[in-house]
Image (cartoon, rainbow, N blue to C red; front, side, top):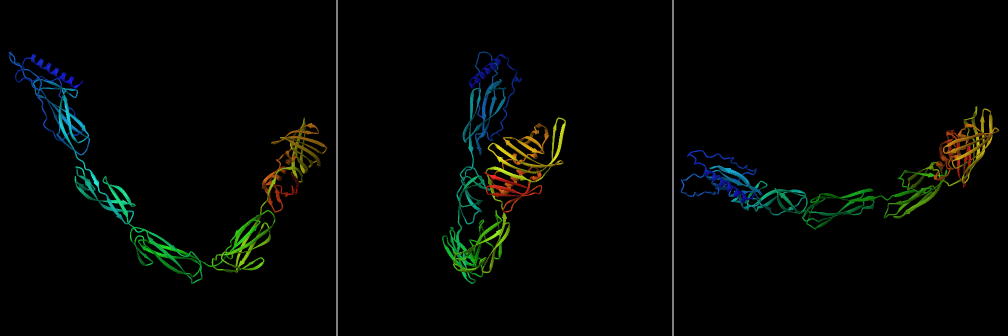
Length: 639
């Protein structure tokens, strides 16, 4: 509902009340007034505190002029509404925005009850009653503002002037001349208040228009321009660093060949590169160095013996330091190097009258050592005379600076073993002890065409049993000797030879032959007037068929009867140590655990192996074949 419509409604209500009043008989004098149908309501104040000053309310009075009639006068009951806006005329504040709290005062000075509408809310006002309605308005700036009330569509306005008070602080730039950094410096900062309210800075009151000097402490790390804050006030600070700085050098000879009693000089050069004059004391002498100035000082030492001499310049004052220059004094002396040229190059610098150690590995037992000495001196200006005694006698040399004396020798030594090489220079002995060890050679076996072997190692207690129907035969065999020739073919391998076995019935020698194609093979054995034919698979080695004199038998045939070299991998090698290859080769001949190699060594001529049964075997490598000698003999032909 708009304000105009509200006003019309209120006016209509007032006319109706007046009409009803005319219809009532006049109230007796002193009688009670009619009781209002609504309770007068005072609006609740907001959380904003009320303003402190108030002016006299503006009052508007509505009166009715009775019309004269010829009839006798009658009492007319009609409301007379007066509206006022109570608000402070002036408000002083130190913050914005603020609330302006004001009061809308509605008074009925008539003799009839009236109804007013304020802000869309109707209020019933009895004769003589005053209704106070709290209101507020938010203002965001200083100046003159209006607060208003709309009562029954009529605006009632009151002017309020708001004054805003606040300080506005400004600090003058501060310039600091520092001679030590970092430092905590106390400075006076001039702060001006350009506002209209007194401010407190660092415990000092600064009134509007005033300028006060206020002390503050600043932590200065380096020269430059900064902005620091003092109780929220930004203070421009410029730090200028005034200090002496130095560039210096010490020098002189760093290394000399001196005789006792000789003197050598060192020098100090120092310059003030700062922007303040420096006060210095150098070895007790006082100096003043302005910015950019420099000085030179010389100091000498007397040499008494070989060693390192430190020349010191003690500086105090603006610079506190001990500046040193080291002079290394050398005694002219030889430097002896013993060199092994073959079979391997080794270089050694034994200490005077001392022994250095080195080691060599050799393939052969007999080793030709080629060695020699190389002698230099640390002299750079003086010639040195040397007497050098080696295996061939004494040689004399005169070495100029940078020169060298050398000589080589050849000696035969045995491996494994030790040999001490010795040189005497000007009655001082230098030794090198050489320890020689044997290292097996590397071997490569690309392919093998044939292996001929004889194995005299006894294999005891092989149990063989066969059954045909209800007939079962059992026998315990000892393999006494096996010979054979193994030939590798493009599609497999074939073997033939003789085998000697013994049992309780005697000792028998028979022929055997076998072959392997793919993953299976067969072996035929003629011994003691019987033929035993065996078929087997190789991965794993398993007997699959047994015929005795052509008759199938279910037999438990020991796999040891099949020469293992027949079904083992071809014993080739690719650049591996001879001992490693021999271990694999002998394992290919092993019929059981007692045939497995236990220790293998290279003795400079051949590989010596001992199997678990205690048999000693010798394996020779080279000449297009490999030979095994001992209880097992074999010739492996390399193709």
